[in-house]
Image (cartoon, rainbow, N blue to C red; front, side, top):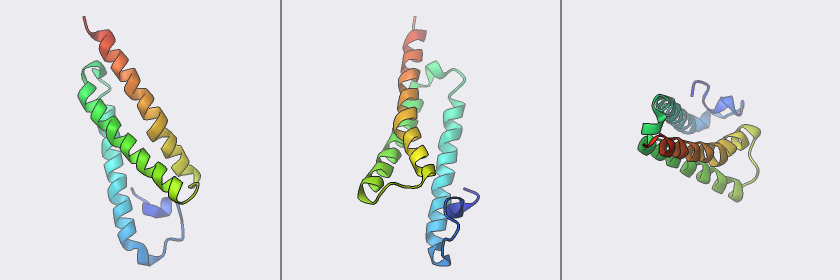
Length: 106
């Protein structure tokens, strides 16, 4: 969010100022999503709806990133890491949260 696309690629031409703005906006959204995920930690067993919605948002983003990979080519390692987080780690956390919620019911 702070570095814009130069955090991934250093030689972004000035012609891509719209890309820079969009990149920073989306990075801010991701930061916000992460902050809401963190806010779910206390009493996570009661946060199923919010956790599910956040997980779906992240997974949809991951599917979009996977589509780009299929259309173009293997992206840089930061993107591969993000893809693994979006399509593997977050779904596993989703399943874990569901189990915690079910286990906490009387």
